[in-house]
Length: 340
Image (cartoon, rainbow, N blue to C red; front, side, top):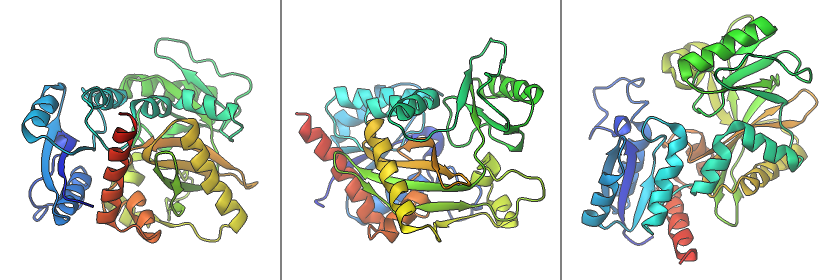
């Protein structure tokens, strides 16, 4: 790829220091993606400027006017403190007619709401767990079609925010208690889904019109302890010490029959098409005891740190890290050309 001027957008608290030396592995979790992306782009001789955002769009316009980037590498996970507002930043970039990486505003909107995405996919006969939504300020009444156990999550937050062992409930009292926790501590509506006991898979998908499904990755829960649910809690995903103690690993999904493997990859691409996700995404599944891959959620613009799931699976598929970032930028540039 030719040398580009790249404006990297990050949330201000994710802007990395110049070096990670002297910091613990746990301390670097928040900076790792930005650090890896910036370092790899510079290794490819791209001219890079980093911009940390909080709650105003003005710095984007100022940076575009002064730096005149070829493409904006969008690594925002939220805006103005709201996960759902990341689509507004993408819309702003689109209005400015500046090429940007990752998902379009429409795909971000359709995939962020867990109820909307599941309704759309169920309509297209993609297996999804039965679910119900519990808005803030309303009494919790479980529909008769929902049987225990259930898992209670935030309706709109991602990155396992608010998910703990107590999220899996077995009674109406515990359901009401956990819904109240989501309302009060996370500040969003809650969704309760049928809990699918089984293996958890992640499938990376990259592309705009023509989609490429990457090798399937599995979250291996190791030894969580007796009576613990095998779920991706915040500790499982982000607590490095806990991961090491419990033997929690992520790696290539082995021992899947070829037909099932291909089915999961095809389903991941169908999900991205249905939810109009472009750029790159990660689709999460649970495999039930009877061999049905149930859709959990779609994550547009997932973590692309060098040794996270998406980059690892891309590398196994022959797309090494710097080349992966070039590919992501090329997709943003081609989408911009197609819209003019």
